[in-house]
Image (cartoon, rainbow, N blue to C red):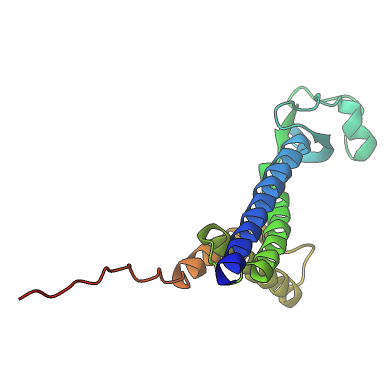
Length: 193
């Protein structure tokens, strides 16, 4: 009976590990397809004007918008593009990283709950770290939002910093609460005189 329960626990743990891997790969694929891009009009005397562009794959930047795109958005620009200005398109890796970590937080949290519900007596080291990374990311998100509520402002302060700190905290907690390995099996010896 115990070996059947242990076998079922191992099967359930393997299924949960597979769910995590498939969900993580799917999340990475979605994030690479919907990359965040922005166009910047850089002028010598008036500063920089920024416009968010539609999402595009990370391997294919959207076309550089015309100067009229910026004059439609910003009334302070002259009607003709100054010679000392340039329009550039930039990939916003920080926005993509924040979205990826937010999505991974949802995946690790969901898989962590499934792991706790299905692990039984078996401990899977990989899913053990997934669980603690989920806890660390949750602590990082709570710290970021808590600081935002205390300080106020337009948005949460340094979300990428808090996400990376939460990721590191989760790995450290996973190492601290790493399950002890079972004692090695010893064979009985017969004393001979």
